[in-house]
Image 1 (cartoon, rainbow, N blue to C red):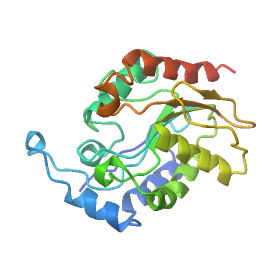
Image 2: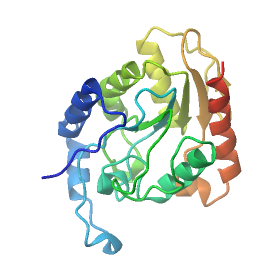
Image 3: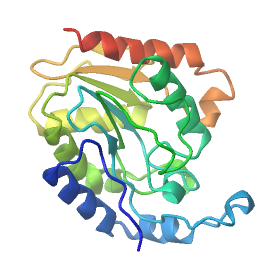
Length: 233
């Protein structure tokens, strides 16, 4: 029996939400892709998760780290966001350096990683073809994101990784009736949202950004530090 990855500390509302996320089959294109991903030779001895990937971390934390979607052989394989791929390694190293992660590596759901004062999730819960969900798929998953954010009752800062996750969060603000005029994506930008958490934008730690030097470790650490500074306000 496949075990459901859990947030820590566990809570009944969060557990119910995670179970609904994992059971979701709302987007036919994503279901077909996640279930049909070809197993990489290096992971041939592993059973892929092949389901929607729920968020992971401290649901009572003050920082939300928001990605775009799981990677085909990352979260879609391990069942945990930013786990088992180069994006996860890059992100978790920075979170660890800034005091939010218990260790600098994120390789498997059973590797002992925990987050303190931080919850990590993605705007779209299933791995998409070409790493790019459609607008309809973002919309279909938006309710789950709204519920996760509602459960984060201590939320004070959001770190949006990539322009698409930044847009997903500003769409959440629109749905909540919060003005977003003038809020545009740019790495390192910090937005003081009226009546809500501070929003910090960062390039996504994907190989296309990290391998080209568009996003360096130092740049990501600086973005995480900007989010941490907002927790003191």
